[in-house]
Length: 239
Image (cartoon, rainbow, N blue to C red):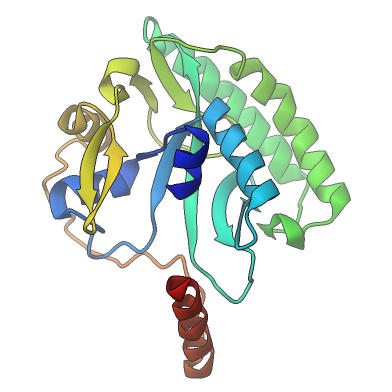
């Protein structure tokens, strides 16, 4: 939030974080991460700014077998906390079903090609330069196809990143102008028509799932490692 304010760009709570803000005013009790959305242009500006100016944080990528996810992380590898950032591209709401069908066809083809590389799964620093070069060569061919518009009547996920299981084209007026909501005692941006957005995303968003499984994005640590991590966080907070 600090870095976004410094360069005049915005992010918004999306997915489970938007649901958590609306239903719980914070984290969903069985969730353990934060998901943010950004327009690609703003995301690119933030990435350049953070990676060039921050001593403590960076924006990098975690490479899954068929896609990648942008993550805001500590530069200190001993601090395992991260925030997922999902860039969005502009598109048109009219004929969005037809657009989505073409998008998913391209996405499936891209995912299969990336998966066929059999690259290492992990953060960018864990992959070889050659692996990343091959992945990004495939990604950029379609990324350039979908990232040309400077505005539109809808937004969709960046094709090189997530692998959605359902239609993810959102009308512009469903998301913008962003509004402030409470999340864990702090104020953050969220989609303009929050309830409409959540219904579109989840259906009956007020119904709790029949089986509740705690999401586990973090790695397991020993008591000693947890103590070391806790001390590192305290040092950051004291600054």
